[in-house]
Amino acid sequence: MFESAELGHKIDKETFRREEPVLREALLDAQLELVEKKSFPVILVITGVSGAGKGETIHLLNEWMDPRHIQAIAMDKPSEEELERPYMWRFWRVLPPQGKTAIFLDSWYMPAILDRVYGRIKNADLDQAMERVCRFEKMLTNEGALILKFWLHLSKEEQKKRFKKLEKDKSTRWRVTETDWDYHERYDDILQVAEHALRQTSSVEAPWTVIEGTDPAYRSLSLGNILLLNLKNRLEAKELPAPAVALPPVMTAIDDLLILKTLDLSRSLEKTAYKEDLEKYQGKLNLLTRDPRFRNISVVIVFEGNDAAGKGGAIRRVTGALDPRHYRVIQISAPTEEERAQPYLWRFWRQLPRRGKIAIFDRSWYGRMLVERVEGFCSESDWMRSYSEINDFEEQLVRHHTVVAKFWLSISKDDQLKRFESRQQVEFKRFKITDEDWRNREKWDAYEQAACDMIDRTSSVIAPWTLVEANDKRFARIKVLKTLCNHIEEALESLK
Image (cartoon, rainbow, N blue to C red; front, side, top):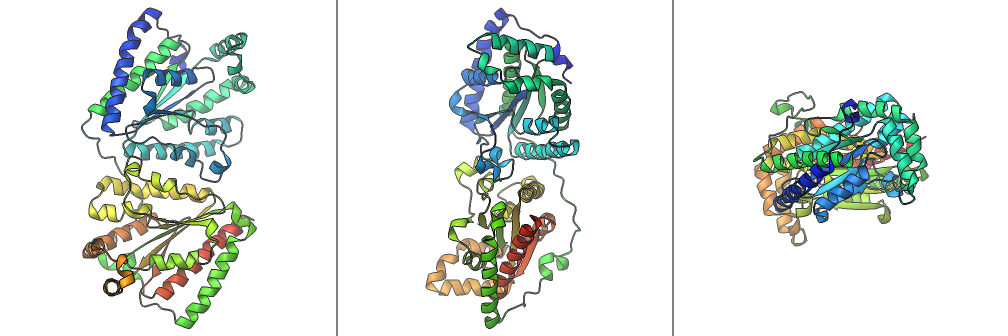
């Protein structure tokens, strides 16, 4: 696929002097329209062989366009903070908001390509990494991002000439390193692996374009015109088509067989037994989090459930066993303006804990499948595709030694009414009941169906849902503590 980028494409100086100002003006106009409309983010991936002009191209785009609305991102070796999160976290956190542009130098591609070239991973590992990249980019384009990926290319002979020319000039000698020459020695291997990766990850939504980098004028005008064409087409599009959604298979349940209807909500625990179990499992949880091996994992705890089901009380029993320096409780409400300008999962990505830490989510990323679905805050295609996106997200967490403990606290409709009325009557509990709670109650059946769909489609072997019978608060709290201890204990044992 690189043959056409080794033909010696060139543009004469006169043509470049004539076309460059026109292109710059058009690009700037398109960028300012994008900034004004704030309708979508632009993500440019610029990578390729060493010496092909990646850095020069990024500098040129900043010169041609308004640099206040462009962020160039060149990833070095992962920092200690980044190593303590899933691999893609370092990219998630710097995604551009709507109306802005981010240029990723090499991005999430070259580390995997080079790992294969140097034998650090196998072909199967590379394929899996590229498949994860495809799903990541699909999620971004489904959220409206414009992704353009450019491979800047040089033949092996031309690369050698470029390196020698740079080394002859004292002012540019620093640009050629031992690593560059090592890559040159491995040129054929890099190209073979790169071609495989590019073919696997070039899609309609996020295509690859290979551009010859021998002549700077040709390279610059080619990339600039492709960027302009895609910007104009997207800006002129009235509405993006809804993405096709593939749902995880699940058996269709009739109403009487919905999973939440199978729970025995009469389960309870006597006060004396509760006190004993509370001391037992809080003590066990404390010891587990002080185990020397705990510094090698992180924990994400998700609490969802019916309104007034006792999530806050369960959270307090968990935090009561923990060192406050090592956990955070994150209460999720309506997204801010900053968060709405990013992909849906962005506001959760940024909250992921470091190794040895715990993040407790009071409501979570499952809001898209629940309140946003039932209340019509997002389109059907949005909440339907969130099943697979969230499964991918949690798979990345688990792969990075994060314990994902998810609890659905379930109460009956009659018990919820009693709790609502009690909250209204007790002065210091009135803040717990709002008009929105009463409105949600009117849609009980719709929320129950949405919750059952969510549990069926997102409960996996690696990140299962624990359904908690919560009519009796004492029973619910002990079940949460006991289950959490089991999850952490299993994770610690797996490290042996």
